[in-house]
Image (cartoon, rainbow, N blue to C red; front, side, top):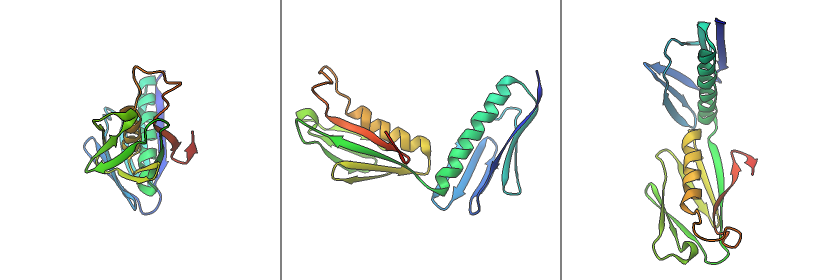
Amino acid sequence: MKKEFSQEIEIPEGIEVKKEDKKIIIKGPEGEVSKEFNFGRIKFENKDGKILISYPMATRNDKRMINTITAHLKNMVKGVKEKYEYKLKICSSHFPINVEIKGNEALIKNFLGEKTPRKCKIPQDVEVKINKEIITIKSANKELAGQSAANFEMATAVRNRDRRVFQDGIYIINKDGEDI
C-alpha cells in the first residue's frame, strides 16, 4: 500500500550540509564527508537545521531506501562532529610483530617469522597511530575507518595453520567506544 513516508534528521550547530546532484557533502569541525546516493524519486530538503527525506507515495522499497539514506546521513553527521575511533591490538606469541606506516600503506614485519613484510592499505582521510601494541584508527567517515581496521585484520589472517596454536595477529578490540 502506498502512502506518504518521511524521515527527519537534526543538524547540530557548526555543521553544514550541501547537496550537489546525487552527492551530499557534510562539513563540520572534525572534517568533511561526502557520499553519492541514488535518490531516484525521493525528495531531499535542508530547512531550519533539519534534513527532511520524503516521498509522497512510497512503496515498501522506497521506505527501505529512505531509511538507508537516513542511517548513512546520521553516521556522516556524527563523524564530522566527533571522529570514529577503532582500536586494534597486536598479539604475538611466537615472533614479535613490527608494524610500520609508510605513506598510505602499513608494513607488517616478522609476522609468524615471515621474511617478506605483509602490506595493508590505509585509505585517504584516515589517521593511524601506533603506540607499542595498540593501533588507533580515526576518521570522520565510518566506512573508511571500519575498512582500514578490517584491512589490518585481514592482512594478518593465519592460513594453513591451526588457529588454536597460532593466535598471532592484529585484532579489533574497540569499535567507536564499544569493547569487543
